[in-house]
Length: 392
Image (cartoon, rainbow, N blue to C red; front, side):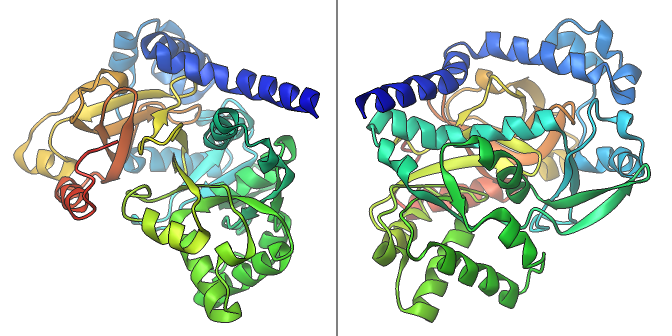
């Protein structure tokens, strides 16, 4: 048993080390990431058009590649969907991720094998918890899978059909076989229920999760924070139990909304018991950071993505007053400074994702919501009403 624990500890240390080293020296890590990304971009038509193979420095990268929004990329993405794979991709896509449409028009984002494996970084929150706490018994239990379907439909690309679905479900389907914890219900069982978004559709998924896990040792819950809360309330309404009555959950790793550690924490602990809460900052485009300890903010994946921010007033105010924001690296932000995130992924160079980021004490950050004029005001109000007041 001791030998197994030592082996597991060594494995976790090896998996977490690149992240920890990057956080210690983000400038060097970001330089290495840029070099890696440029090699991939040089194999695409978009990258060739912008001279990716001739770019050697961050300054040259900024001159060659413009900051682009989803609106800018959308015509190119539609061409990729029509079969022009090499336009943006240097690999064939394994699937297409769709957004839930909660921030506007539903987006389609291609997921490549490289991109998909980078999403395994979401597991860093859980792995850090186990490494720090020594709770290796977490791996003896199951992960309550409340993720969205990985298959909703198909798109035809160059004569072949490729599935599209939600990024969280696609991730679980492709990567869970390589992780040391089993998810239940299986992603295939969730997919079999279809991609509907009605209350009845979600109740069917919740019932599936209850039946699959009611007699299991659930030690981990991952997914979307509001969905985890809705599932717990469904259990009480339909079965007169809360998750804390069924399971001794150790940790919940959740994302999708701002305020998980403040506004959502009381409800999560009331429903799931005295769980450890770890926030994941991820979007349909990638997993960009995760919480690493009890401090209530996430730490960027500096070893995987290139992070810039446009510092200045929110986009709507900047457009109204014709004010240009300053571009700087994420790790260069001062505590208390806010900016609109610009991330470079294997698929999308310098993508302005539309999220407002606030810097806390290095290396901690929060996403406080969408890049709207009212977001800082709402964040300040939530900080005041939860008595958080900027505390980690």
